[in-house]
Image 1 (tube, rainbow, N blue to C red):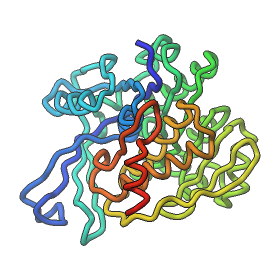
Image 2 (cartoon, rainbow, N blue to C red):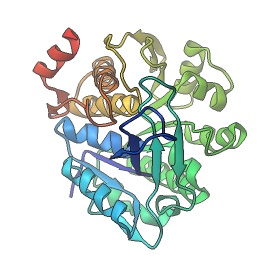
Image 3 (spheres, rainbow, N blue to C red):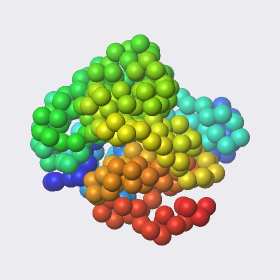
Image 4 (cartoon, helix red, strand yellow):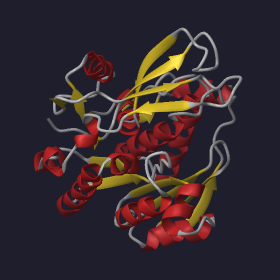
Length: 316
């Protein structure tokens, strides 16, 4: 099946304390499905394009319910594999009255066994866009090899690709992250990272200098995000900034993925780079204004956010 977006990576079953803002004292938890790449796939699907997601899921109940969650969002999960390992999970508090505390159960998970042979050439030749992240690189050596394989193959096929640095310090050291991620952050259409991530991977955080350096490395669109602060970008050697919509941020988790998905959808729809990045910032702000990775993802058609949704977001 021809798709607009193909992506792959780890998905987590997230258990969020619901009766108190502390994992330690909570007696009740709500479960949701989330993961950087899956979040992007859901965003692209919500905006009216076809997205396909691959991962390895355990032969367990969590794997089954998570697959059902993703499929319910219109994302094609027919390529996924079930394996004899456990499906990863995360436990966290809402972070409304206390700092967010997160505990993971992911080492040795089904998703960490992803390997290059999982990504067939046809998965890439049948799509318009490939999206990958540094999280897949961090969860295992085979995950990192798979990201390298997919990006290399996509380039040889002329498929546009994006790469989110997505540095997770709980998963590996900064030195290991730089060694793995820096060679991947070149010759791609769209590079995304936060200020601290660029500092680790490129050795500098000066927005204009590092983003123009990324352009020179073959990353045609390079973006540096910083929460609700102006987003800095460089496109083909031209530097600029975009101020995201002002919202009351209830839960920023997942907003970066919504930004990425909204931008990719905009680019695929034919929007200009600036308009696509603006759409991405609107999607990110919408997600940050609500609790949950998927709750605030806007709807749209043909890759563009619906006008009534835009008006609602801008009026908040």
